[in-house]
Image (cartoon, rainbow, N blue to C red; front, side, top):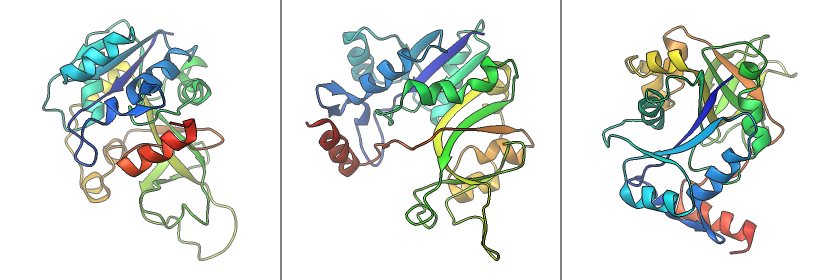
Length: 241
């Protein structure tokens, strides 16, 4: 099984310009993500995908592999899909978000576990248990509800499901990591955007709205994502600098 991990890294983030180059401890954030992906035994190759020369130079400076992409991509997945076309020998493509410096090799292994086991779903993603106190009502915590076979039924920023009756429900905290069968990723990149995707601001809903399947893989806990300077400060505090 040949699996390519692609780390999309965009400089022009609206909320946090230059985010991949922000330093956490002694390393830029993109290096933290790259090194975690390199430690994942399931990945045959890891590359950073960017349209920015400063990010590319940074990656090269620590010995990483980089692919330059167009600058007009609407999403990170579109950037990943462009790079995947250059690696036709790879059967599976993992999208490892560049804003998750504390992602672990175990999490990435869990993300691609169905492919390694020999099944070839359209797409997989990762989730962990949802904290009902802090996460259920938080629109920044994306929820995913699943069927009895671990397939995603819906993703939402809203508190779902509605508990008319108390009891357990298959709702989880969605983590923004994805893997795709190579041929499906190419197809996904050509799908038109969809109403629910636009409404929720969640690109994975495009897959469900077009009738395709996402397998939700499980991991024990979430890790800190960096979307704002305030979250960067939290990350720096965690590593002591």
